Image (cartoon, rainbow, N blue to C red; front, side, top):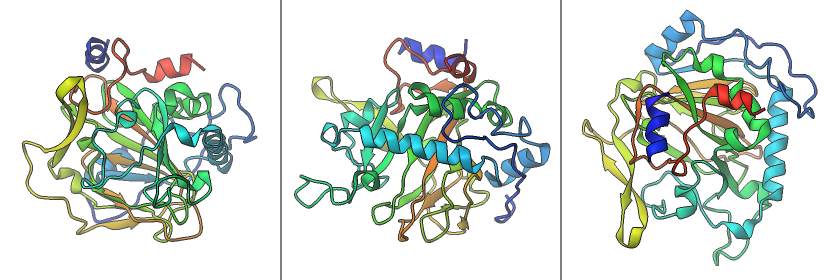
Length: 335
């Protein structure tokens, strides 16, 4: 058993992009049977050159990783889930800005092992009584356990095991999945951050595996990354704080090695085509701007951690007591 799962059960070169070609095509985008995404990743793991690039730069872009059919199957499924979602069941708004985040949002706090829907800040009218745009355009993201509870996303995420195996981990564990919509008109900015702020292990191990479901550029909010910034110490941590009457809140606290606030100096735009995959080291500084275009910028993120590391009980993401994060193998066995 891994330390991570057991603990839960108890409680840079300058801006270059390395890429490789695509694997075989998925085939019919309407297929919902087992092995839908079995051919999405080829070869089986990261090459030595790719691993070296990731270690040096803190990120890696793999061009043409997934086929158009794969991306459209994921988009179709998320649209179906959003269409079936009852807007009256949540008013939770997602934002990365400290001054705006509701750190006592129970809907968010309990979403680690569930599939939940989060609104864009501009989704509602001034009175907060109705949506200003079509529902699909008002959703910021859907998370954070799509890979556990939805068969389509579970199958895609389980196909990333070979990629995760090249991240230098003893036991890669698929921790968190989220589908980010970033729609036209409503798709908000995501400020500069390090993923280890939100998903901390001891020692730090988290990596993000980000699929560009849509083409992304500087108009519709592509990723921006500071190459080599993964050498920057973790600046802050988002931790749980117990309050009166058994309530829990979240607080951003300085990390012990804090040196300064994160800036965007030295950042480079990382435009992607549909099907490109971006791997992000947990300490690399990255962000995205508001979507000012007339086209969507859908993306699917899977965060992977090392099961041999210790998962902090103060992290915001906790599974229901008595359960643990599934392994890649367990995801595959439930398909």
